[in-house]
Length: 92
Image (tube, rainbow, N blue to C red; front, side):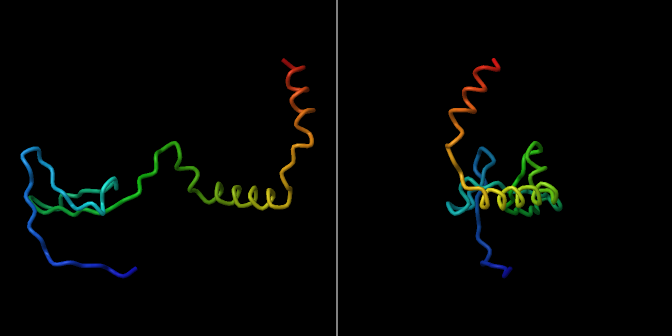
C-alpha cells in the first residue's frame, strides 16, 4: 500500500474538544493514540464487535466457503416447501 502524505495543516480544537478531519472521513471509526503529551496518532480502523469476531477466524471462513460452494451445486427450489410447512405445523 502506498502512503499518501499531505503537508501539515493547522486545525483548531473547538470549545467542545472536537477537531474536524474532513468530510472524507465522516462516519469512519478511528483509533486515537496519545504518543506523548500533545502528540496524537489518528488512524482509521475497522472495529469488529466481539460477538462477530468468530466470523473472521480461519475455521469460519473455511466453513462459509464450503457452504457457498455447496449452494452453487444445489440450485434453490420451492418444490418441497408445502411438505416442509405441513410437517412443521403438524409437529406443533
